[in-house]
Length: 441
Image (cartoon, rainbow, N blue to C red; front, side, top):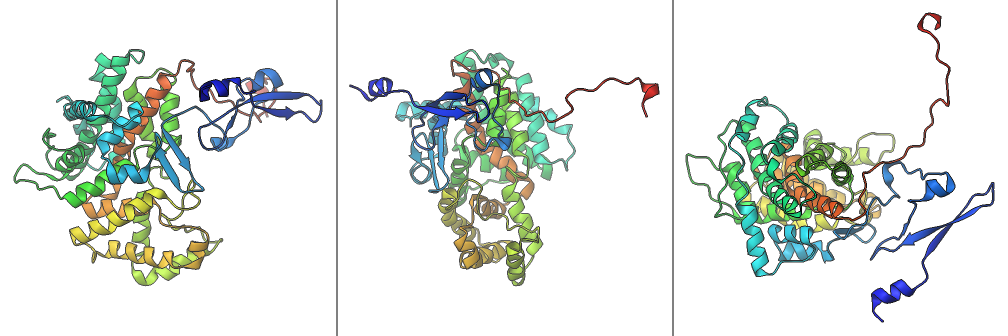
């Protein structure tokens, strides 16, 4: 008997819910996950019991089934389609990880070459998109521009907006993954007053992005392989991270039937929040606030003081209670990039390395497992590469686009997909008589 038949033959698991007042009991189905916690199926809870669950921030609520990403926060583990993040960053590349997230398996050689060709030859944007940028102030926040131009892509590529057509979904996903780096680079160039650089098909995905950001028409641009390698790892490490705020936003928008360009734009707006995608920017802002290595003990003392609102940004993680596996991957690249670019004596980055050293030897942080997380190292690397802090969240969005697309694709292909409609626990007035305006006191 196969494992599937054994599972079907086994008695169904249930969770018993009891009402203490009436004594009534209800048996709720239990849904097994491959790894991690199982779920209690509460879809019929309201109809059968007259109650809803109350779970602000959805910390104990599973909104979907997914085969894409798994996180074990206690063990410090992150997997995409069953592959560890350590293996993917050390042995794979971003194009291969994109394919894996979208289609479930690592590609064979022909599939890899075909997919890479699709992404490479979709990197150019419609020439009229260039005019979008002229409508923004030069000092506009890059994320504000990205929200506008990504959403506006649907006005140019309306030939692939039928979400019920598999071919339309495919080409829209390819367009999004390929064009968002171009738009991100254009956003960067617009802010600094330099001409846009057209993408080059002879470069890899990451090399092409670096070229579009830092090349100028007046002279050749040489790509630093150490920088390219580090940025590729940053992209892989940020490609997907389960049902976080922006991914949930993309899924909720997608459940309405909205086109994929609008859905990804909604994810970008959600990512913009400082509690989500702006963490690595906050690391650099904190370092500016500390200012000098001599002040590190003062700020560490403040971080330990429960009555002081100061927080040590880039240390610890809401999900990872042990250590952030992405930070472990990126730490070596962080030091390699600083060494390669010769910026170890740059005051802000020198301060960051000293803060890392002191915090890792401080019993307060060690005992509480408040280790540097991925935002600490990625912020330092991006700063060393020459990106301003205002671009950090844009680069996060660039990397996360493939994860958003994979999650959107998975949801759309679910046979029983329905529009998302969270419930609420109403605590307002039960009923009030209307009083005419001239009689109100």
